[in-house]
Amino acid sequence: MIDPIKPKKAVTETLPKLGLVLLIFLSIFWGSSWPIMKIGLREIPVWTFRTLCLFLGGFGVLCIAKVNGLTLTVPRSELRPLILVSLLNVTGWHLCSAYGLVHMEAGRAVIIGYTMPVWASILGSFVLGERLTLPRLTGLFLGIAGLLILIGPDLKVLGSVPLGAIFMLGAAVTWAGGTVLLKYFRWTLPITVLTGWQLILGGIPVIIGAFILEPRTVLLQASWRAALATGYAILVGNIFCFWAWVKVVNLFPASVASIGTLAIPVIGVLSSAVVLGERIGFGEIAALILVVMALSIVMIRPKRF
Image 1: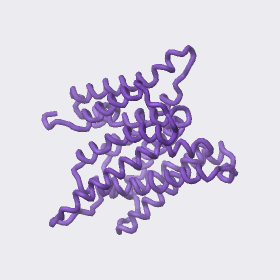
Image 2: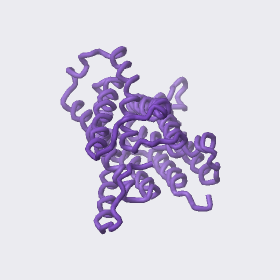
Image 3: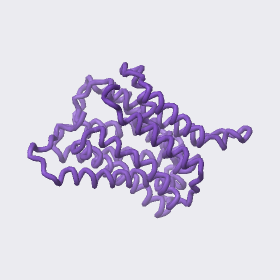
Image 4: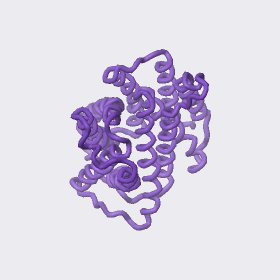
């Protein structure tokens, strides 16, 4: 479902170019946000960091919706499904991915996080009754192979638990579950309003956790680097990238827009090497290739399937 803002019939040649430019920026900004978030999480605890991202990001998205003339009212019949989806899509994803970044390298984290479409295709077969086709099974196999390559070194060490990989896998699966439920329920809300409220509602358990688990003065002790990283995550990673994504979906077919996101884990790995000095070894390259192949197989669906 997309916003009821349809492009004019007389589409100019600049629209596809605009979509391409936005898609490039989207891949760069979303991919590079992973190492930048890790910088913020080095000094700002997980619950406080995500509270800022979710509430300020959600407020910004709803402001965009209001400027576009959309109503922000949530129908009563859609409130319970919205809460359920928010807990998976927002609370689960943001907390698990943040803890994943704390416990593992950002480049590896982004690879595991973006296996989401693979798990969504599997969950969709049970919840939505979608066919579990050969391409989807192949994508699942490749995604699991990439995951095993990343956590293999930890499994070789007796007693070592790959906490980072477990958290990131949890993030990918909860995101996938929320995505499937978004398709399962019927919505009358425009996607901008729907996502804005997801950020707000999904952020409520996070802010409660921040007040209970973390000190109030933690933000006063953060350096300017951590503050800038947090600001980037809010303004660029959440607000701008979401607006750009909605715009891209309006300009391009959904399949083209989805294929464009394949560059995000690649940029995440490269930017983590540049910003954080993380090593890109054979394991990272092999896992990245397998996951991108899995995503391309799942996202690019032949008509016969």
